[in-house]
Length: 225
Image (cartoon, rainbow, N blue to C red; front, side):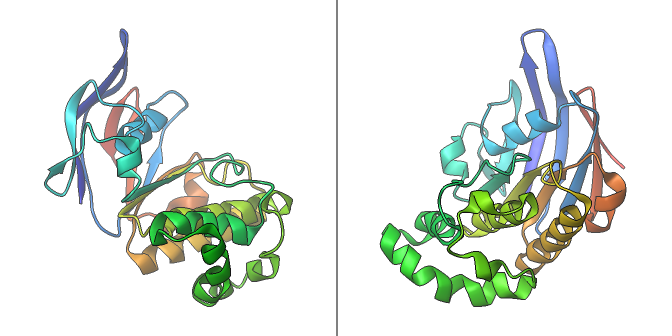
């Protein structure tokens, strides 16, 4: 479980987050709503360790991680951005990108990770999706559709078996069909692996079937709906 206790973030005289108190439990799927500038990205930056709160504390179970670096938090936390080109290398193939992600979890050499990748993940992860992504292992990821790239990016983000996954508007740049496929994938993937997930979205109607909880940020203040 993760918890934020009296977390505030100030940028000069501007208060981006004000006295945030919340708990995030295993298998929670929390949708985060709010207008631009409401504090959503600042919340993710605080949880991920990109910034340190001005005041308050962040806990992983009983461990105070408030001042833990972003790199160290990446061992149990993953973040996916709305830009489908972030989180992967466009000129590398799907297999190479996934092998690169495996390096973080298996402590193996790149060639070994590439060799072991198809046997390890095709049957367990790609084929069950029914999206034929296994047919694109040797395709540069930059040649895939936005929806396909984002799905691969999310798979990469979860290879380290994180406790928590932060999704920052993952469907913002996608067409309606890709959006539907991605949301269904995220729902099944995180539920089956019991990954606590926070997702920022402006499209509450399309994403609401995912949610176990709804949060709304307004002028840096958090309300659970």
